[in-house]
Image 1 (spheres, rainbow, N blue to C red):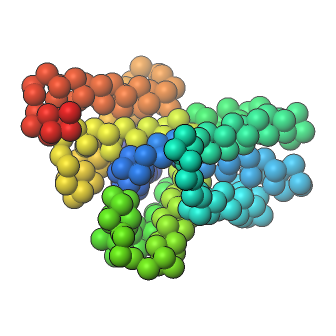
Image 2: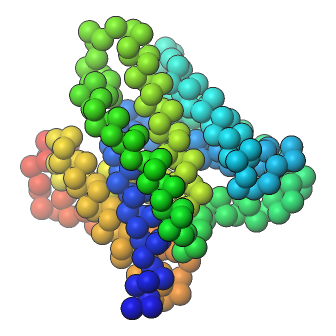
Length: 277
């Protein structure tokens, strides 16, 4: 019972993140901008460090708003970015922005109190120390965003799949900004709890597993949520039982599940996989 009480907050927080990031993951995989969340997460961390460097306190409203504003500026750039050259894709720009943000963060390490610890926490997260107050805050932020995405689901799916040809340019741009800005908000909040690596796996691994099992959007959303939840529960239990770091354990658990599903569908000759091949 004591174990369940201790694990309840991190488990609930992870399940909320799995649902939200799993949804966005299906869009991100289809759009082909796989590493956008790592770039956004690193930019958010850089924004926080800049806020602290300018005199704010970590966790304060001022620093949080500074980090969010910094992040939203970058995701707006992703939304507006158009690359016509055949050798240059959004992934190239995303990779450059990630490396720049990481490089600038390391330049600030010695100038920010506790800079090294902050960078380490940004990568590994602090899942086991999440509180019910953190969960309520997360729920308040996630719920309206997902509700709006459900309301606009048809239009957003058309944009993601490249079938929004008849959509007015202003509407297309507005929806693109909406998608990336709301995605940025979710990632900023998720990184505070899970860290960059866990957030990346929550975003990509469940959606990738789902893509091996079904091609319908509804099916992918359902499978990614269920498989992500299963991996999260297994990862947290293994981490707690064997006294392992929670972040790396979650990453390895979800990664192993993805490998098993990919190998199983290949070996059994699943119609979905054959059609994709």
